Length: 68
Image 1 (cartoon, one colour):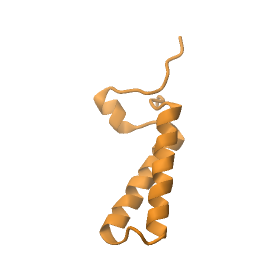
Image 2 (cartoon, rainbow, N blue to C red; image 1 turned 180 degrees about the vertical axis):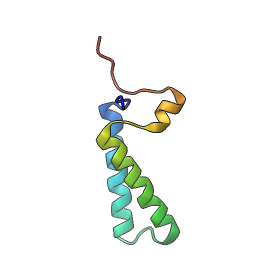
Image 3 (cartoon, rainbow, N blue to C red; image 1 turned 90 degrees about the vertical axis):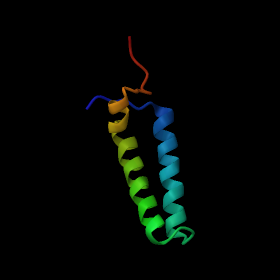
Image 4 (cartoon, rainbow, N blue to C red; image 1 turned 60 degrees about the vertical axis):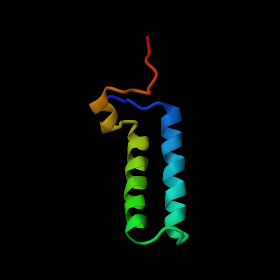
């Protein structure tokens, strides 16, 4: 897998995942919506750790700076 996520994108995804996790465990978001939110948070966490987003590949997008 070739990296296609830049640092800013990774940080934003990590922050969103942390906020979603906090909302779920504090009881603010519960039920089915809470479970969906946790799945999305897990996906964001995983993609930010490996710096690769499969959806970016499908649309041909890359936020990773290129080295020349």
